Image 1 (cartoon, helix red, strand yellow):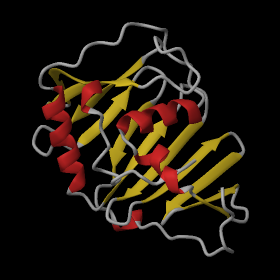
Image 2: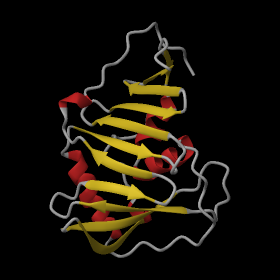
Image 3: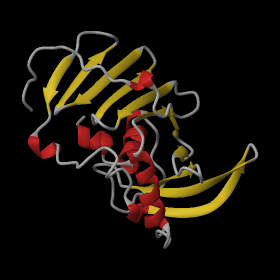
Image 4: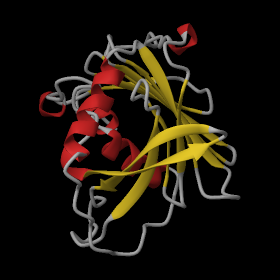
Length: 212
């Protein structure tokens, strides 16, 4: 797993969540066209995220699966930490400064250098949302609060037929444009812990990374 695959956008995050959590793929459908204000909305959401120092994306797998994950993103340092759990296995990965550190069940860390051609992403936030895959939906009210709503068409998973698409419906704060939740019936995601000092990502101290 490399930095670009973690951080290239909501589309990649959601696609990764679906794969990592073992969710079944949606049935093949025809991808909906993005609405005229989809790109403008995507720009506002990315702009709001760019102002944040850090946040978390909490992912939950299908009901009864016991699968879950938490991704922590530190915007200024471009560091990411992903903790995935399923049954007796807990895996951790940290991406920082061109290296990926991994361990399982609290064991020793191993480190791998990310290939040069895998680090071309301009920034964690700057490329987080593919505007061509965003469609604005009518607002909804939750707990007496009006939220903005949009739909993301996920890119097909590697090896999947080009006609196989999946979507996620997401909500955002209409005042700040920060995202709140995303779901598609298989996995659900919640954006939390904005600018929380507890989001600090400590890079493990291990031996020199092995080239990939």
